Length: 204
Image (cartoon, rainbow, N blue to C red; front, side, top):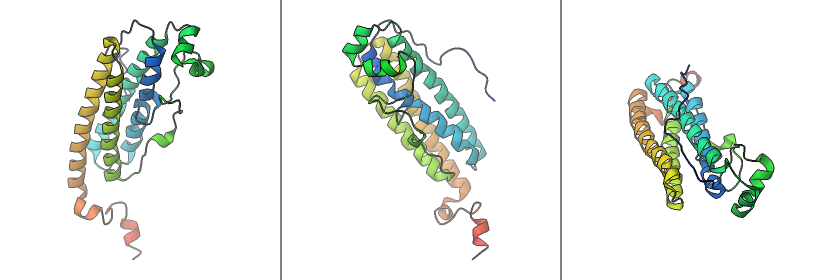
């Protein structure tokens, strides 16, 4: 259950049409390290997380990633809102325009469509949290790359906010991994998962 507040987590007010910039930023919507894959990853992993408070953290961060998805979509929308056909052609946005006009559709900057193969949900607490740590670092790297490429301060400010949140999420997942190791008795966890494998051990 979520309470939805009809405000962006960070304001987006972009006044200059730039389809080329939109084509780059859209990667954080449907790219391999984007906000869509992040939200689905964490909201899927939470169900099999054996440590309750870590499951709560996955719910919280997964929900926040949905808010980040809104920010990215708002940015792409505002960057293409008054798009002319000539601007689309000049910026190389014409192929996207043919399929979607200026509607939002999840894809990477290179045009590869979003797929559920972009994320994992293993049901192994240590594997999932280790993936989550890597995912946050990869997302942070994409924001770094976007900030290297984009000069417009109206675009950069929301990107800087989103980058900062990736760093915070990485820190929270690091704490969650250590807490989970303690709870699961990590000395034995790599040999077998005592809870999950108990049924199989009885057969030996």
